[in-house]
Image (cartoon, rainbow, N blue to C red; front, side):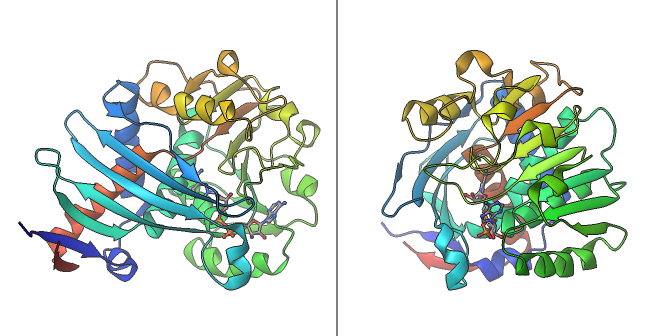
Length: 329
Ligand SMILES: NC(=O)c1ccc[n+]([C@@H]2O[C@H](COP(=O)([O-])OP(=O)(O)OC[C@H]3O[C@@H](n4cnc5c(N)ncnc54)[C@H](O)[C@@H]3O)[C@@H](O)[C@H]2O)c1
């Protein structure tokens, strides 16, 4: 029997004008439920048709009072920058949890970007003793831009951002886009990664993920009380940071260890099970106290509960605003 499914294109999703504050709230709610053990989140299976590329399936059920389920099919292709295409591309499918029928199919590019910025912002919220003043962003693409939006949303007093990207043209784009959004923020261009890291409260890394990571960013460049937030697996942070900080936090312990166990990422000096202080859900649900001094290292691979929570928010907004197209399945 055919039934109606709501289709939301990327333009539809953008037209909903959802704010970073709303995405952060949704992602945080998902993290609390995850910490309370109410989320089913298997590690993401993937295929890898080209070097340094992936296409992942990310299913998840967020239980408790949320009770929403869905799956994201998302690709990451670093060469897309040269082709004027996004690094990440995907589609999300939202299911009804009583019947399993599909309620909506939507663009997943916007959600992947915005929920990643929201997760980084929450890392900054839980692991900062006081409001950060200076943030470094390494890798100035889509994720580098949204991470700043997330952190600045939670910490409006943030006064400067130090920027590094080996592709120099990225700086102009970055400063032009975000300078308009945050006119009070000072944008500093750094010639080297080392210069960008000096004296920063938070260093956020957003470079392409590599099967043979170079991990160029070393501990001696950081001030002792620095918070590192990596959205790029082990591409940038050296093992002397990942394995040598006061605490190491990931967004999902199971997914991190499963990925490490496959022998490609998080090898050679990255923490194994004993070295993980907490996952972000443990902190959000107050199962573990946050640590706010010393070198703190967060590696957020991106978890499907963020996507389900963001998709639920988009679906609700779209129904209210009568946005999207109803298609027969
Ligand atoms: N953790 C998550 O939840 C999550 C979600 C989405 C994307 N990502 C990851 O974030 C990263 C960035 O994605 P994006 O969409 O911004 O890609 P993008 O192509 O828009 O930007 C990548 C940027 O990194 C720069 N870069 C290249 N080599 C670098 C290096 N060695 N050091 C510093 N910068 C370098 C590029 O010039 C470019 O500006 C990717 O690794 C992607 O897989 C993570």
